[in-house]
Image 1 (cartoon, rainbow, N blue to C red):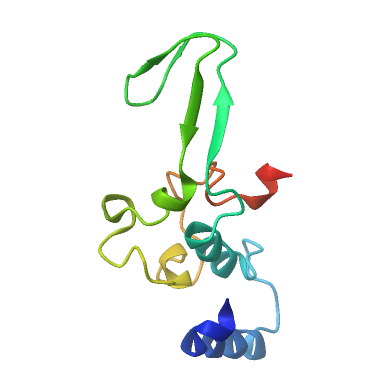
Image 2 (cartoon, rainbow, N blue to C red):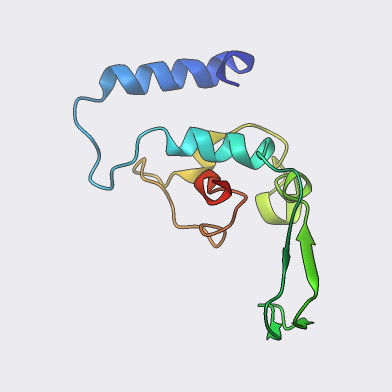
Length: 118
């Protein structure tokens, strides 16, 4: 992925050269991996079966046995979620002004947490 974006590859190389100690929050290349998984998720579609009746955060009701699916490939490109530059590979979108990972309302989503698929 980095070889397709030389300007990002250069940023990564420069950050590695400059880094002598780990940041307080333990971040390393998570921001680069997060944006890669946002654009090219390991699973382009995922679904789950509801084990009990529940309500989704937007108020939509689901019943036990319902299949709930989402298209992570499409969600990673939705401008109303990611902004007008949604289709651009921009790892810095995951960092705050000090270079630390920003909290995200999607932080527990399979869209950005690859290990959830293991």
